[in-house]
Image 1 (cartoon, rainbow, N blue to C red):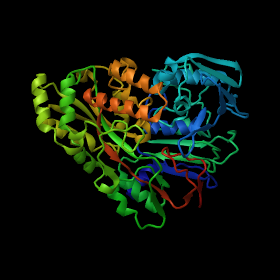
Image 2 (image 1 turned 180 degrees about the horizontal axis):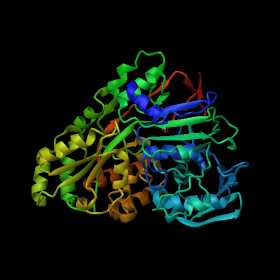
Image 3 (image 1 turned 60 degrees about the vertical axis):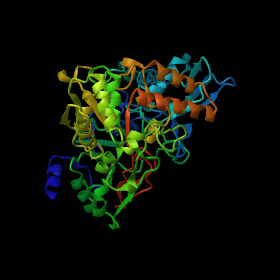
Length: 520
Protein backbone atom coordinates (compact mmCIF):
# COMPACT_ATOMS: atom_id res chain seq x y z
CA UNK A 1 0.00 0.00 0.00
CA UNK A 2 2.78 2.38 0.88
CA UNK A 3 4.26 1.82 -2.54
CA UNK A 4 1.05 2.89 -4.24
CA UNK A 5 0.82 5.95 -2.07
CA UNK A 6 4.38 6.86 -2.93
CA UNK A 7 3.50 6.64 -6.60
CA UNK A 8 0.54 8.91 -5.98
CA UNK A 9 2.71 11.41 -4.20
CA UNK A 10 5.32 11.27 -6.93
CA UNK A 11 2.59 11.90 -9.49
CA UNK A 12 1.67 15.07 -7.65
CA UNK A 13 -1.69 13.80 -6.43
CA UNK A 14 -1.01 14.70 -2.84
CA UNK A 15 -0.24 18.24 -3.76
CA UNK A 16 2.60 20.58 -3.00
CA UNK A 17 0.71 23.31 -1.23
CA UNK A 18 2.26 25.34 1.55
CA UNK A 19 2.24 23.81 5.00
CA UNK A 20 -0.01 26.53 6.29
CA UNK A 21 -2.81 25.49 3.97
CA UNK A 22 -5.50 23.17 5.26
CA UNK A 23 -6.35 20.51 2.68
CA UNK A 24 -8.95 17.76 2.98
CA UNK A 25 -7.89 14.67 1.02
CA UNK A 26 -10.85 12.50 0.06
CA UNK A 27 -11.58 9.28 -1.77
CA UNK A 28 -14.95 9.47 -3.42
CA UNK A 29 -16.94 6.62 -4.94
CA UNK A 30 -15.53 7.19 -8.42
CA UNK A 31 -13.01 9.25 -10.34
CA UNK A 32 -14.36 12.43 -11.88
CA UNK A 33 -14.24 12.81 -15.64
CA UNK A 34 -17.47 14.63 -16.60
CA UNK A 35 -17.61 18.22 -15.32
CA UNK A 36 -21.02 19.18 -16.66
CA UNK A 37 -23.75 18.47 -14.07
CA UNK A 38 -26.51 18.80 -16.67
CA UNK A 39 -25.47 16.11 -19.15
CA UNK A 40 -25.11 13.24 -16.65
CA UNK A 41 -26.84 12.01 -13.51
CA UNK A 42 -23.73 10.38 -12.02
CA UNK A 43 -23.27 11.05 -8.33
CA UNK A 44 -19.65 12.16 -8.66
CA UNK A 45 -20.54 14.87 -11.18
CA UNK A 46 -23.41 15.99 -8.97
CA UNK A 47 -21.01 16.26 -6.04
CA UNK A 48 -18.67 18.29 -8.24
CA UNK A 49 -21.62 20.55 -9.05
CA UNK A 50 -22.25 21.27 -5.39
CA UNK A 51 -18.58 22.17 -4.94
CA UNK A 52 -18.42 24.89 -7.60
CA UNK A 53 -22.03 26.01 -8.11
CA UNK A 54 -24.69 27.42 -5.85
CA UNK A 55 -28.38 26.62 -6.24
CA UNK A 56 -31.36 28.93 -6.62
CA UNK A 57 -33.09 27.39 -3.60
CA UNK A 58 -32.01 24.40 -1.48
CA UNK A 59 -33.20 21.58 0.75
CA UNK A 60 -32.67 21.69 4.52
CA UNK A 61 -31.97 18.64 6.68
CA UNK A 62 -35.67 17.71 6.56
CA UNK A 63 -35.52 17.90 2.73
CA UNK A 64 -37.77 20.99 2.76
CA UNK A 65 -37.19 23.89 0.29
CA UNK A 66 -35.36 26.91 1.73
CA UNK A 67 -33.98 30.14 0.22
CA UNK A 68 -30.41 29.90 -1.05
CA UNK A 69 -29.37 32.29 -3.84
CA UNK A 70 -32.90 33.67 -3.79
CA UNK A 71 -35.99 33.82 -1.64
CA UNK A 72 -39.45 33.65 -3.16
CA UNK A 73 -43.11 34.49 -2.99
CA UNK A 74 -46.06 32.66 -4.55
CA UNK A 75 -49.21 34.34 -5.86
CA UNK A 76 -52.54 33.51 -4.22
CA UNK A 77 -53.65 31.45 -7.22
CA UNK A 78 -50.48 29.30 -6.97
CA UNK A 79 -49.43 30.04 -10.54
CA UNK A 80 -46.80 32.78 -10.22
CA UNK A 81 -43.47 32.34 -8.40
CA UNK A 82 -41.30 35.42 -7.89
CA UNK A 83 -37.65 34.82 -6.95
CA UNK A 84 -35.45 37.65 -5.66
CA UNK A 85 -31.65 37.20 -5.75
CA UNK A 86 -29.83 38.15 -2.57
CA UNK A 87 -26.99 40.67 -2.32
CA UNK A 88 -23.35 39.81 -2.96
CA UNK A 89 -23.73 36.91 -5.39
CA UNK A 90 -20.68 36.58 -7.65
CA UNK A 91 -19.31 34.12 -10.14
CA UNK A 92 -15.74 32.94 -9.86
CA UNK A 93 -14.64 35.42 -12.55
CA UNK A 94 -15.90 38.30 -10.39
CA UNK A 95 -19.06 39.03 -12.40
CA UNK A 96 -22.31 39.54 -10.50
CA UNK A 97 -24.98 36.86 -10.74
CA UNK A 98 -28.02 38.25 -12.54
CA UNK A 99 -31.53 37.08 -13.28
CA UNK A 100 -30.46 36.49 -16.89
CA UNK A 101 -27.85 33.97 -15.67
CA UNK A 102 -30.51 32.23 -13.59
CA UNK A 103 -33.05 31.98 -16.41
CA UNK A 104 -30.42 30.70 -18.84
CA UNK A 105 -29.40 28.04 -16.28
CA UNK A 106 -33.04 27.09 -15.68
CA UNK A 107 -33.72 26.66 -19.40
CA UNK A 108 -30.71 24.40 -19.98
CA UNK A 109 -31.46 22.30 -16.88
CA UNK A 110 -35.12 22.04 -17.82
CA UNK A 111 -34.28 20.27 -21.08
CA UNK A 112 -32.63 17.37 -19.24
CA UNK A 113 -34.18 17.03 -15.80
CA UNK A 114 -37.32 14.90 -15.55
CA UNK A 115 -38.94 17.30 -13.09
CA UNK A 116 -37.79 20.31 -15.08
CA UNK A 117 -39.41 18.91 -18.20
CA UNK A 118 -42.71 18.60 -16.30
CA UNK A 119 -42.46 22.20 -15.08
CA UNK A 120 -41.76 23.53 -18.57
CA UNK A 121 -44.77 21.63 -19.94
CA UNK A 122 -46.81 23.84 -17.58
CA UNK A 123 -44.84 27.05 -18.01
CA UNK A 124 -46.65 30.10 -19.40
CA UNK A 125 -43.78 32.57 -19.00
CA UNK A 126 -40.31 32.86 -17.46
CA UNK A 127 -39.34 36.50 -17.21
CA UNK A 128 -36.65 38.82 -15.78
CA UNK A 129 -38.26 42.19 -14.97
CA UNK A 130 -34.94 43.41 -13.54
CA UNK A 131 -31.40 42.14 -12.89
CA UNK A 132 -32.33 40.49 -9.59
CA UNK A 133 -35.87 39.25 -10.15
CA UNK A 134 -37.20 36.14 -11.88
CA UNK A 135 -40.93 35.67 -12.39
CA UNK A 136 -42.04 32.16 -13.33
CA UNK A 137 -45.69 31.83 -14.33
CA UNK A 138 -47.41 28.46 -14.73
CA UNK A 139 -50.59 27.70 -16.63
CA UNK A 140 -52.00 26.00 -13.54
CA UNK A 141 -50.78 25.40 -9.96
CA UNK A 142 -48.13 22.74 -9.44
CA UNK A 143 -47.78 21.56 -5.81
CA UNK A 144 -44.33 20.03 -6.43
CA UNK A 145 -42.76 23.17 -7.97
CA UNK A 146 -40.48 24.14 -5.08
CA UNK A 147 -39.62 20.53 -4.25
CA UNK A 148 -38.33 20.03 -7.80
CA UNK A 149 -36.38 23.30 -7.92
CA UNK A 150 -34.69 22.60 -4.56
CA UNK A 151 -33.94 18.88 -4.96
CA UNK A 152 -30.37 17.82 -4.46
CA UNK A 153 -30.63 15.00 -6.99
CA UNK A 154 -30.55 13.66 -9.57
CA UNK A 155 -29.95 16.85 -11.61
CA UNK A 156 -29.92 19.79 -9.19
CA UNK A 157 -30.59 23.25 -10.52
CA UNK A 158 -27.10 24.78 -10.47
CA UNK A 159 -26.62 28.39 -11.51
CA UNK A 160 -24.01 29.06 -14.20
CA UNK A 161 -23.09 32.22 -16.11
CA UNK A 162 -25.51 32.82 -19.00
CA UNK A 163 -22.70 32.42 -21.53
CA UNK A 164 -22.00 28.91 -20.17
CA UNK A 165 -25.65 27.94 -19.82
CA UNK A 166 -26.13 28.88 -23.48
CA UNK A 167 -24.29 25.67 -24.35
CA UNK A 168 -26.73 23.19 -25.94
CA UNK A 169 -27.97 20.77 -23.30
CA UNK A 170 -26.61 17.78 -25.22
CA UNK A 171 -23.10 19.26 -25.40
CA UNK A 172 -20.69 19.38 -22.46
CA UNK A 173 -19.65 22.79 -21.15
CA UNK A 174 -15.98 23.75 -21.33
CA UNK A 175 -16.08 26.86 -19.12
CA UNK A 176 -16.16 25.92 -15.43
CA UNK A 177 -16.81 29.33 -13.95
CA UNK A 178 -18.96 28.59 -10.95
CA UNK A 179 -21.14 30.39 -8.44
CA UNK A 180 -20.44 28.25 -5.38
CA UNK A 181 -18.17 28.21 -2.34
CA UNK A 182 -15.27 26.37 -4.07
CA UNK A 183 -13.42 26.93 -7.35
CA UNK A 184 -12.16 24.18 -9.61
CA UNK A 185 -8.36 24.27 -9.98
CA UNK A 186 -8.31 23.44 -13.67
CA UNK A 187 -4.51 23.21 -13.86
CA UNK A 188 -4.60 20.29 -11.38
CA UNK A 189 -7.57 18.42 -12.84
CA UNK A 190 -6.57 14.94 -14.02
CA UNK A 191 -9.71 13.23 -15.38
CA UNK A 192 -10.48 10.04 -13.49
CA UNK A 193 -7.41 10.45 -11.28
CA UNK A 194 -7.68 13.56 -9.11
CA UNK A 195 -9.44 16.89 -8.85
CA UNK A 196 -8.65 19.88 -6.65
CA UNK A 197 -10.93 22.62 -5.39
CA UNK A 198 -9.92 25.77 -3.57
CA UNK A 199 -11.96 28.12 -1.42
CA UNK A 200 -13.65 30.94 -3.36
CA UNK A 201 -12.71 33.92 -1.21
CA UNK A 202 -15.45 36.18 -2.60
CA UNK A 203 -18.31 33.76 -1.93
CA UNK A 204 -20.89 35.35 0.37
CA UNK A 205 -22.58 32.71 2.56
CA UNK A 206 -26.12 33.15 3.76
CA UNK A 207 -26.21 34.52 7.32
CA UNK A 208 -28.10 31.64 8.94
CA UNK A 209 -26.36 28.40 10.05
CA UNK A 210 -25.98 25.53 7.59
CA UNK A 211 -29.03 23.24 7.59
CA UNK A 212 -28.77 20.30 5.24
CA UNK A 213 -27.76 21.80 1.90
CA UNK A 214 -29.41 25.10 2.81
CA UNK A 215 -28.13 27.91 5.02
CA UNK A 216 -24.66 29.40 5.22
CA UNK A 217 -22.01 27.63 3.13
CA UNK A 218 -19.00 28.69 5.20
CA UNK A 219 -15.72 27.19 3.98
CA UNK A 220 -13.18 26.59 6.76
CA UNK A 221 -10.44 24.85 4.74
CA UNK A 222 -8.24 26.07 1.91
CA UNK A 223 -8.46 23.11 -0.44
CA UNK A 224 -10.29 19.85 -1.02
CA UNK A 225 -8.72 17.08 -3.12
CA UNK A 226 -10.57 14.08 -4.49
CA UNK A 227 -8.11 11.30 -5.17
CA UNK A 228 -9.29 8.25 -7.08
CA UNK A 229 -8.18 4.91 -5.61
CA UNK A 230 -9.71 2.00 -7.52
CA UNK A 231 -8.25 -0.36 -4.91
CA UNK A 232 -10.49 0.49 -1.95
CA UNK A 233 -8.28 -1.50 0.45
CA UNK A 234 -5.48 0.96 -0.33
CA UNK A 235 -7.84 3.80 0.57
CA UNK A 236 -8.75 2.13 3.88
CA UNK A 237 -5.06 1.80 4.71
CA UNK A 238 -4.54 5.45 3.83
CA UNK A 239 -7.28 6.69 6.14
CA UNK A 240 -5.88 4.58 8.97
CA UNK A 241 -2.45 6.14 8.48
CA UNK A 242 -3.86 9.66 8.19
CA UNK A 243 -2.81 10.17 4.58
CA UNK A 244 -6.39 10.73 3.54
CA UNK A 245 -9.19 12.23 5.59
CA UNK A 246 -12.42 10.88 4.13
CA UNK A 247 -13.84 7.86 2.28
CA UNK A 248 -17.31 8.37 0.89
CA UNK A 249 -18.28 4.68 0.66
CA UNK A 250 -16.80 2.02 2.94
CA UNK A 251 -17.35 -1.56 1.74
CA UNK A 252 -18.97 -3.46 4.59
CA UNK A 253 -16.50 -6.33 4.38
CA UNK A 254 -13.64 -3.91 5.12
CA UNK A 255 -15.24 -2.33 8.18
CA UNK A 256 -13.29 -4.59 10.58
CA UNK A 257 -10.10 -2.86 9.37
CA UNK A 258 -11.17 0.47 10.91
CA UNK A 259 -13.71 -0.44 13.57
CA UNK A 260 -12.07 0.13 16.93
CA UNK A 261 -9.62 2.70 15.54
CA UNK A 262 -10.21 5.86 17.61
CA UNK A 263 -8.81 7.97 14.78
CA UNK A 264 -11.45 6.86 12.25
CA UNK A 265 -15.20 7.45 12.57
CA UNK A 266 -17.56 5.23 10.56
CA UNK A 267 -21.12 6.51 10.18
CA UNK A 268 -24.15 6.51 7.91
CA UNK A 269 -25.17 9.76 6.26
CA UNK A 270 -28.81 10.78 6.69
CA UNK A 271 -31.22 9.68 3.94
CA UNK A 272 -28.42 7.92 2.06
CA UNK A 273 -30.07 4.52 1.53
CA UNK A 274 -29.52 3.37 -2.04
CA UNK A 275 -31.73 1.46 -4.46
CA UNK A 276 -30.05 -0.81 -7.02
CA UNK A 277 -31.70 -1.24 -10.40
CA UNK A 278 -31.04 -2.66 -13.82
CA UNK A 279 -31.86 -0.52 -16.83
CA UNK A 280 -32.52 -1.88 -20.31
CA UNK A 281 -32.22 -0.26 -23.72
CA UNK A 282 -35.71 -0.07 -25.24
CA UNK A 283 -34.65 0.79 -28.78
CA UNK A 284 -32.60 -2.29 -29.72
CA UNK A 285 -33.19 -6.08 -29.64
CA UNK A 286 -33.70 -8.05 -27.56
CA UNK A 287 -35.20 -5.62 -25.02
CA UNK A 288 -37.32 -3.75 -27.57
CA UNK A 289 -39.63 -6.74 -27.06
CA UNK A 290 -41.75 -6.34 -23.88
CA UNK A 291 -42.07 -10.10 -23.43
CA UNK A 292 -38.29 -10.43 -23.31
CA UNK A 293 -38.05 -7.56 -20.81
CA UNK A 294 -40.59 -9.37 -18.64
CA UNK A 295 -38.54 -12.58 -18.96
CA UNK A 296 -35.49 -10.74 -17.66
CA UNK A 297 -37.43 -9.35 -14.70
CA UNK A 298 -38.73 -12.81 -13.81
CA UNK A 299 -35.23 -14.29 -14.09
CA UNK A 300 -33.71 -11.93 -11.54
CA UNK A 301 -33.73 -12.37 -7.78
CA UNK A 302 -32.68 -9.59 -5.42
CA UNK A 303 -31.17 -11.61 -2.57
CA UNK A 304 -28.05 -12.83 -4.44
CA UNK A 305 -27.41 -9.31 -5.78
CA UNK A 306 -27.60 -7.76 -2.32
CA UNK A 307 -25.51 -10.48 -0.74
CA UNK A 308 -22.79 -10.02 -3.35
CA UNK A 309 -22.49 -6.27 -2.95
CA UNK A 310 -23.04 -5.89 0.79
CA UNK A 311 -22.88 -9.33 2.38
CA UNK A 312 -24.06 -8.24 5.81
CA UNK A 313 -27.85 -8.32 6.20
CA UNK A 314 -27.72 -5.42 8.64
CA UNK A 315 -26.99 -3.15 5.68
CA UNK A 316 -29.48 -4.33 3.04
CA UNK A 317 -33.07 -5.42 2.45
CA UNK A 318 -35.13 -6.69 -0.45
CA UNK A 319 -37.55 -4.12 -1.88
CA UNK A 320 -39.62 -4.36 -5.05
CA UNK A 321 -40.94 -0.79 -5.05
CA UNK A 322 -39.89 1.38 -8.00
CA UNK A 323 -40.54 4.40 -5.75
CA UNK A 324 -38.58 2.87 -2.87
CA UNK A 325 -39.66 1.20 0.35
CA UNK A 326 -40.76 3.29 3.34
CA UNK A 327 -41.44 6.28 1.09
CA UNK A 328 -44.77 8.14 0.82
CA UNK A 329 -45.79 6.54 -2.49
CA UNK A 330 -43.83 3.28 -2.53
CA UNK A 331 -45.68 0.03 -3.30
CA UNK A 332 -44.22 -3.47 -3.67
CA UNK A 333 -47.15 -4.83 -5.69
CA UNK A 334 -46.30 -7.43 -8.35
CA UNK A 335 -42.67 -7.76 -7.25
CA UNK A 336 -42.77 -11.19 -5.58
CA UNK A 337 -40.50 -12.85 -8.14
CA UNK A 338 -37.84 -10.22 -7.39
CA UNK A 339 -38.04 -10.45 -3.62
CA UNK A 340 -38.69 -14.21 -3.39
CA UNK A 341 -36.69 -15.44 -6.38
CA UNK A 342 -39.53 -17.53 -7.74
CA UNK A 343 -39.64 -16.48 -11.39
CA UNK A 344 -37.11 -18.67 -13.22
CA UNK A 345 -39.67 -21.09 -14.67
CA UNK A 346 -41.85 -18.21 -15.88
CA UNK A 347 -38.81 -16.47 -17.37
CA UNK A 348 -37.99 -19.49 -19.50
CA UNK A 349 -41.62 -19.72 -20.67
CA UNK A 350 -41.68 -16.04 -21.59
CA UNK A 351 -38.50 -16.37 -23.63
CA UNK A 352 -40.04 -19.28 -25.52
CA UNK A 353 -43.29 -17.36 -26.15
CA UNK A 354 -41.29 -14.35 -27.34
CA UNK A 355 -39.33 -16.45 -29.84
CA UNK A 356 -36.01 -15.30 -28.37
CA UNK A 357 -33.32 -16.08 -30.95
CA UNK A 358 -30.27 -15.80 -28.72
CA UNK A 359 -29.51 -12.18 -29.55
CA UNK A 360 -26.69 -11.31 -27.13
CA UNK A 361 -27.41 -8.99 -24.24
CA UNK A 362 -24.49 -6.51 -24.19
CA UNK A 363 -24.21 -5.87 -20.47
CA UNK A 364 -21.93 -3.01 -19.35
CA UNK A 365 -19.96 -3.88 -16.20
CA UNK A 366 -17.86 -1.32 -14.25
CA UNK A 367 -14.84 -2.70 -12.42
CA UNK A 368 -13.53 0.33 -10.53
CA UNK A 369 -16.60 1.32 -8.51
CA UNK A 370 -16.98 -0.71 -5.31
CA UNK A 371 -20.72 -0.05 -5.12
CA UNK A 372 -21.37 -1.21 -8.70
CA UNK A 373 -18.83 -3.90 -9.52
CA UNK A 374 -20.62 -7.06 -8.36
CA UNK A 375 -24.19 -6.50 -9.52
CA UNK A 376 -23.65 -7.02 -13.29
CA UNK A 377 -21.81 -10.29 -12.71
CA UNK A 378 -24.59 -11.65 -10.51
CA UNK A 379 -27.44 -10.46 -12.73
CA UNK A 380 -25.73 -11.74 -15.89
CA UNK A 381 -25.52 -15.24 -14.43
CA UNK A 382 -29.21 -15.21 -13.50
CA UNK A 383 -30.09 -14.16 -17.06
CA UNK A 384 -27.95 -16.99 -18.43
CA UNK A 385 -29.74 -19.42 -16.12
CA UNK A 386 -33.02 -18.41 -17.78
CA UNK A 387 -31.65 -18.91 -21.30
CA UNK A 388 -30.31 -15.47 -22.26
CA UNK A 389 -27.04 -15.09 -24.14
CA UNK A 390 -25.09 -12.47 -22.21
CA UNK A 391 -21.95 -10.62 -23.26
CA UNK A 392 -20.51 -8.98 -20.16
CA UNK A 393 -18.21 -6.09 -21.15
CA UNK A 394 -15.87 -4.77 -18.44
CA UNK A 395 -14.86 -1.09 -18.25
CA UNK A 396 -14.36 1.69 -15.72
CA UNK A 397 -17.44 3.52 -14.46
CA UNK A 398 -16.69 6.79 -16.20
CA UNK A 399 -16.37 4.96 -19.53
CA UNK A 400 -19.70 3.31 -18.83
CA UNK A 401 -21.48 6.58 -18.10
CA UNK A 402 -20.19 7.95 -21.39
CA UNK A 403 -21.14 4.86 -23.38
CA UNK A 404 -24.64 4.57 -21.94
CA UNK A 405 -25.47 7.84 -23.72
CA UNK A 406 -24.92 6.12 -27.09
CA UNK A 407 -28.03 5.09 -29.01
CA UNK A 408 -25.95 3.04 -31.46
CA UNK A 409 -26.69 -0.65 -31.90
CA UNK A 410 -24.97 -2.78 -29.24
CA UNK A 411 -22.60 -4.29 -31.83
CA UNK A 412 -21.59 -0.75 -32.87
CA UNK A 413 -20.68 0.57 -29.43
CA UNK A 414 -24.13 0.76 -27.89
CA UNK A 415 -25.51 -1.40 -25.14
CA UNK A 416 -28.48 -3.46 -23.89
CA UNK A 417 -28.24 -3.30 -20.12
CA UNK A 418 -26.40 -1.80 -17.18
CA UNK A 419 -26.91 -1.60 -13.43
CA UNK A 420 -26.87 1.60 -11.44
CA UNK A 421 -27.68 2.83 -7.97
CA UNK A 422 -29.84 5.75 -6.92
CA UNK A 423 -30.38 7.22 -3.52
CA UNK A 424 -33.92 6.42 -2.46
CA UNK A 425 -34.62 10.14 -2.19
CA UNK A 426 -33.74 10.32 -5.92
CA UNK A 427 -36.49 7.96 -6.95
CA UNK A 428 -39.21 8.39 -4.30
CA UNK A 429 -41.16 10.99 -6.27
CA UNK A 430 -42.46 9.84 -9.68
CA UNK A 431 -42.06 13.34 -11.14
CA UNK A 432 -38.33 13.41 -10.51
CA UNK A 433 -37.64 9.67 -10.86
CA UNK A 434 -35.61 9.57 -14.08
CA UNK A 435 -36.33 5.88 -14.60
CA UNK A 436 -40.02 6.73 -15.03
CA UNK A 437 -39.45 9.21 -17.81
CA UNK A 438 -41.24 7.78 -20.87
CA UNK A 439 -40.75 10.50 -23.47
CA UNK A 440 -38.56 8.60 -25.93
CA UNK A 441 -35.37 10.32 -27.02
CA UNK A 442 -35.79 12.93 -24.24
CA UNK A 443 -36.02 10.22 -21.57
CA UNK A 444 -33.18 8.91 -19.42
CA UNK A 445 -30.75 6.40 -20.96
CA UNK A 446 -32.72 3.48 -22.41
CA UNK A 447 -35.23 5.90 -23.97
CA UNK A 448 -38.63 4.20 -23.42
CA UNK A 449 -41.52 5.70 -25.34
CA UNK A 450 -44.39 5.26 -22.91
CA UNK A 451 -47.45 7.51 -23.08
CA UNK A 452 -49.15 5.71 -20.18
CA UNK A 453 -46.41 6.48 -17.65
CA UNK A 454 -46.37 10.10 -18.82
CA UNK A 455 -50.15 10.32 -18.29
CA UNK A 456 -49.87 8.79 -14.82
CA UNK A 457 -47.16 11.28 -13.89
CA UNK A 458 -49.25 14.16 -15.20
CA UNK A 459 -52.15 13.00 -13.05
CA UNK A 460 -49.82 12.74 -10.06
CA UNK A 461 -48.49 16.25 -10.73
CA UNK A 462 -51.97 17.74 -10.67
CA UNK A 463 -53.05 15.84 -7.54
CA UNK A 464 -52.45 17.30 -4.09
CA UNK A 465 -54.17 14.95 -1.60
CA UNK A 466 -51.73 12.39 -0.15
CA UNK A 467 -54.11 9.42 -0.33
CA UNK A 468 -54.95 10.16 -3.95
CA UNK A 469 -51.25 10.43 -4.76
CA UNK A 470 -50.63 7.06 -3.10
CA UNK A 471 -53.27 5.47 -5.33
CA UNK A 472 -51.51 6.88 -8.38
CA UNK A 473 -48.20 5.65 -6.98
CA UNK A 474 -49.63 2.11 -6.89
CA UNK A 475 -50.74 2.46 -10.52
CA UNK A 476 -47.24 3.61 -11.47
CA UNK A 477 -45.74 0.61 -9.68
CA UNK A 478 -47.92 -1.83 -11.63
CA UNK A 479 -47.30 -0.16 -14.97
CA UNK A 480 -43.53 0.18 -14.41
CA UNK A 481 -43.11 -3.52 -13.63
CA UNK A 482 -45.51 -4.72 -16.34
CA UNK A 483 -43.47 -2.78 -18.91
CA UNK A 484 -40.17 -3.26 -17.07
CA UNK A 485 -39.10 0.36 -17.07
CA UNK A 486 -36.47 -0.89 -14.66
CA UNK A 487 -35.70 -3.98 -12.58
CA UNK A 488 -35.51 -3.04 -8.87
CA UNK A 489 -32.70 -4.98 -7.19
CA UNK A 490 -33.11 -4.01 -3.53
CA UNK A 491 -31.90 -1.35 -1.11
CA UNK A 492 -28.72 -0.98 0.93
CA UNK A 493 -26.53 1.50 2.74
CA UNK A 494 -22.77 1.97 2.72
CA UNK A 495 -21.31 4.02 5.57
CA UNK A 496 -18.75 6.77 5.15
CA UNK A 497 -15.46 6.97 7.06
CA UNK A 498 -13.67 10.11 8.20
CA UNK A 499 -10.68 10.90 10.32
CA UNK A 500 -11.63 12.12 13.79
CA UNK A 501 -9.82 15.34 12.92
CA UNK A 502 -12.67 16.16 10.49
CA UNK A 503 -15.49 17.68 12.51
CA UNK A 504 -18.84 19.41 11.87
CA UNK A 505 -19.30 17.64 8.54
CA UNK A 506 -22.88 18.17 7.40
CA UNK A 507 -25.04 15.07 7.75
CA UNK A 508 -26.70 15.05 4.32
CA UNK A 509 -27.25 12.53 1.52
CA UNK A 510 -24.82 14.52 -0.63
CA UNK A 511 -21.34 14.78 0.94
CA UNK A 512 -20.32 18.45 1.00
CA UNK A 513 -17.17 20.13 2.25
CA UNK A 514 -18.32 23.49 3.54
CA UNK A 515 -18.97 23.93 7.26
CA UNK A 516 -16.49 21.21 8.27
CA UNK A 517 -13.22 21.84 10.15
CA UNK A 518 -9.96 19.91 9.97
CA UNK A 519 -7.78 19.85 13.09
CA UNK A 520 -4.01 19.35 12.81
